[in-house]
Image (cartoon, rainbow, N blue to C red; front, side, top):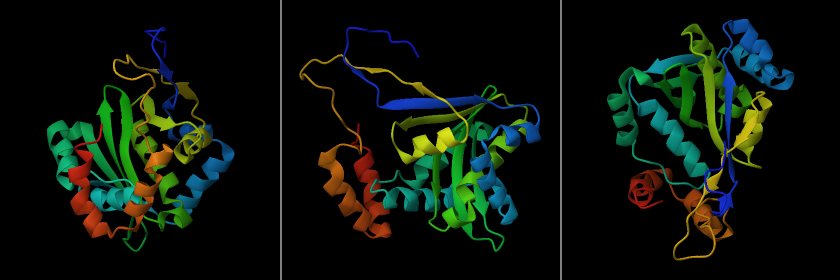
Length: 226
């Protein structure tokens, strides 16, 4: 990504990850680095199953639980259902379940031309031991390959975070995203992100809040976030 305004203040907090989807399913599996490939195979060995959902119900339960554990309010379920309605076949929810039917992980993705873009995702805590998150993204890639898609867009992540490391482990290389700011009434770029120390108390408080209350209160908060 090239800068457009070299005289504006720059923030290089985020990078993006994009990679070609190969035409052969096994080739895509072998293109995953060895340690990460072992996690995908662990999920397969555990008998995990991926399903395409017609509603956002199961996805929202997983997503809301996930962001609550991270101290972040969730958008309302009706927002995700609206995305599925408006975008139709270009918006899809893939949910991973255990052999006994327990929901473990879910992702809402968009399809654009020859690309798949996993955009919103979440996991229950039980997903980690069963490698459900790893299996989820492999299933999304495998299905995209079967559809003849050419590019897997893993989206942006903050540098130095867990999601950044996770995507690197899949063999994706980061591309810097240059956020340029034209400042009018302040001298410094605003740091409106969870890494800002001033938000840590709020994040800790939100994590301790009952999930039902967090899901009710969250939509009132996120609508006012920049």
